[in-house]
Length: 150
Image 1 (cartoon, rainbow, N blue to C red):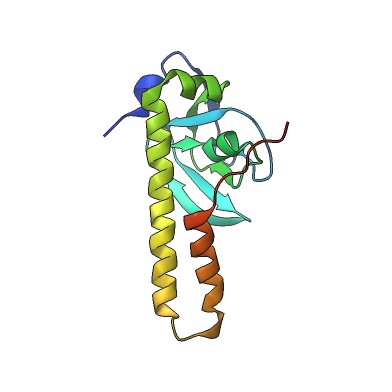
Image 2 (image 1 turned 30 degrees about the horizontal axis):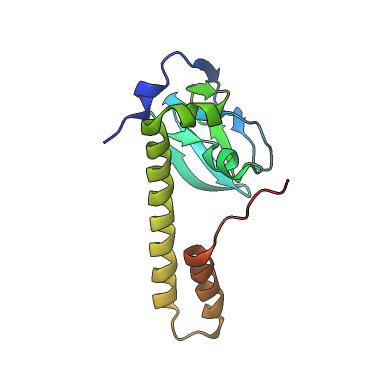
């Protein structure tokens, strides 16, 4: 499997202490972050959705690609080091390998979400409120990004 760590050589590295907020939901910091070492938790609306310690994990990619606020908070659980990619658009444009890695990461997440929603749909097939899940699945499968204004 592709290793993003080979592409971050020479990038600025920043260390975060346990309990430190690396990235905050609703904020817009700009850079792309790549975990080099340590362990973090990802929180959405103050609920833990993931605990990650795998070197090469990427954070901030959705905010960068969608040009929106961060969708989750990342908090250090132990001392962590991150490569800070200050100009993520330039970084991704200059590295096909890094861009493909991010695309693959996002495709895995979308696949897992689709699988989860289908499982929910199957479990609650006889309930009236399942229309909400149908709507979400339909939106995921047919949503096209809007073109930027201007």
